Length: 507
Image 1 (cartoon, rainbow, N blue to C red):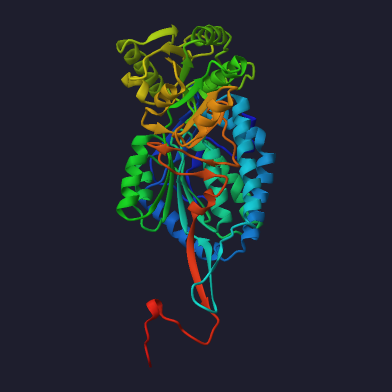
Image 2 (image 1 turned 180 degrees about the horizontal axis):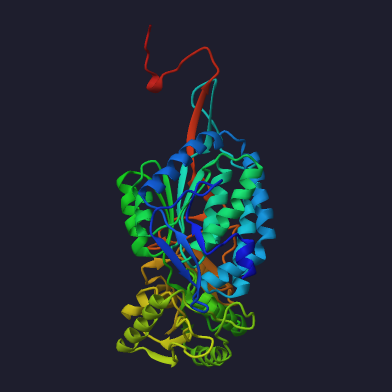
């Protein structure tokens, strides 16, 4: 495939790199099969412990130099990465689609997110500002400043195989940090391609080797990162189970953990909603990326006066969905990432039925021509009760749960009544309902939207959630502060030295 060649992806690829050149990887080979057609795309040689230590050691060396580069100069390097990504948008977007299974437009959109975060980071490189404060002491001045933190360990997930890395890396780099990236072993070739793109830009700008480290491997690499005292910040995206393990290991050494974990996102559809907007937002949120976004819409909480209407409209909309090869832009829904994900999907359907859920759009695995990989499933809809156990959990698949409500307070309670707290939305034209949903008594999620669905977060806002979602924030707003250390400074420009609490100390 031409797009693989243009990204320098070969049959066998090194999975360990310090940014300028690959390191001979000595871990087991990881085979990357496409969920699109079940074919082998390529092989990536993973890291062993010696490879890991070599990358981290080089990152420590690089940090000592990189932190001294002026932030705007670091921003210029990131600007050039953005330009390189523009040139590689088509092949990289195709690789994302082919290796992960999301639609081609979503693949292109993910690369566009990378470009956008580069643009954001360039501006940020001139705005890493602190505060100046009045001192209680005469002829003294206080201020605070932000310094580079060190090595940022990045653990990313398969569903956004390149964007999540860029959200972390671009911000970390303009902040003066260096990065060591452990991508999902389910999408290693996307990571290798990104490293190739960045390496060319770094070489052209004489960026110290080690600023961008890549370590492909399994769970053990994540465990090494989490336990490593040389890495002050670990940013981890993935399941709640994984996040708890990372948080425990990082916390035990008093490091920092930035966690972006599971979501169980709901849309409240009011009787005052614009139903056309509500249906479109719910449909895209539920079936986009085959239900494999952390911001995927899992639950619809619908006012009982419009419940039947919404149900009918959804069933009709689901009948129009085209499931198939995501590189064909006529299709709406691609495959799940692998057969393990298919089994989790089937198990969730089975459990839902055992608990009394009624499916109004049936699920199932597709077979035959075009579905040879065994990873294509039918998006489905079930009517449920909010207290059912299956509804409390995130299933990374296109299963949508419908439930009724009578009062807004009841709807908010249902919305908040799950362990996760990432994204939420209300569809209403009633100002009082919208404002109550956004108030302190409303949604308990990190993202709360009005008349827009749960997915499709913009890079300009801080992205993340509460409760079992982890509490971390990436991307926009002041999320950059997570990647730096704060220092408070006091300057005495007088001829006196007033001591604390008025103590007199004669010498």
